[in-house]
Amino acid sequence: MTIFFTFISFLLTPTLALASDIEQRIDLTGHWVGIVAISLFFIAYMVVMAEEFIHLRKSKPVVLTAGIIWALIAWYYQAHDIPHIVEIAFRHNLEEYAELMLFLLVAMTFINAMEERQVFEALRTWLIRKGFSYRALFWVTGLLAFFISPIADNLTTALLMGAVVLAVGGSNKKFVLLACINLVVAANAGGAFSPFGDITTLMVWQKNVQATNGAVTFWTFFTLFIPALVNWLIPAVIMNFAVPDQKPKGSSVQLSMKRGALQIVTLFLITIAMAVCAHSFLQLPPVLGMLTGLGLLQLFSYYLKMSGAKTQFSSKSLQDLSNPIPYDIYAKIARAEWDTLFFFYGVVLCVGGLGFLGYLSTTSQVMYGHWGATNANIAVGVISAIVDNIPVMFAVLSMMPDMSVGQWMLVTLTAGVGGSLLSIGSAAGVALMGQAHGSYTFFGHLKWMPVVALGYAASIGTHLLLNNHLF
Image (cartoon, rainbow, N blue to C red; front, side, top):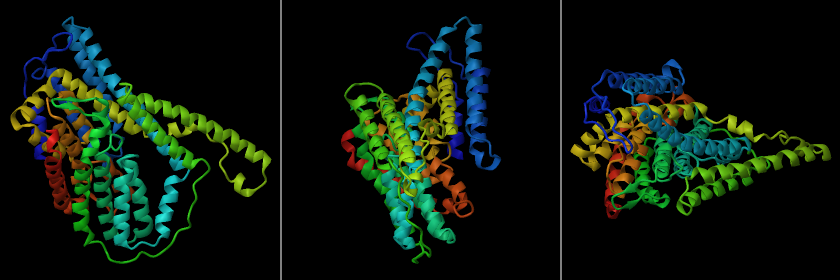
């Protein structure tokens, strides 16, 4: 917690007035408005961290705090007859959130559609039926988590593989603990080298960061593949010796995917390709390609609905009648993680408000001016193990320090994999604690933190060595 409170103390240090691109902003870091704003954000985030115990959805405190912070800023500027700067700044932050929210909404809709078509369930039952030993299952689920999370996301991947682990080894708490730690590390590491693997990588990609020696493009992220692989492999190899060398009992009936499942998977891959092309070749936000792909999914859902109705009235076979006929794509959209989406809104607006007040400039001066970019970016990863990596990365992007492509990739790596140091450091870890309640715990993960930290340090060293040309 020392690093966290040090980070907060830097935010509370007064700074010089910031110059807006349009007009002069007023520095309020030492004013009661700024102090109240940073205090409210701190309290809200303490409530977010206590979600597991108080059962209050994490979006509620940050959405409320965002409204209060911007209301205080607007009131102060209105009182000084400077009304329009706040409106422009708020709309800018809202636009950034809107792009990311729509992008994530489409991705979640595809994942929900594939889940409803039993794509993930078919994979889970296939793994169970193969009769892997505990150690083999440890490696298979970890490997799948590492390679699925770049396409889906680390949270969905961890929950999917967590279901496999619990299905075959639920009675063996030692195996479940080690396998869940492995899943958290693998899912976070896999998500770090893809723009689609984590919200933080998506934020860096959509921001279209211009570095001192080039720009961060879609393909730049894949330079992190080997460092991310090292981040997962080192803890996995060490934990492997503690995994029981036994074979779990039981079997499962193989479930088949529902009609249209493979077509939806194909459409998802096409949608990702369109998002990349929109950004790389048309110089448009990636969300354009994602929403276009959603249109294709909507048309395909219409085909499933109409062809299913014809099947129902023209066939008497039980196999055809077993297909779910009413297929409504809007039901899949409604099942999106709205708590996560609104939490992201609250974080973006809260951090944006604190940046408008002047706190992010102070933090940037201290971390990137005095510590140096490498030390600052390593610290970002450690901070993200305590504070969620979304506000941490958004703060870095709001500071927009003058760094090389290599340094931007370093902070992307550390923010992505740093959350693996603690079970509460990432959405994947928090979700698995709920899914494997009693077997995968905070203190169980904490016991293996030195091993995870070894992988964290090795991944940073690998990046500095292999990607030296990017610095």
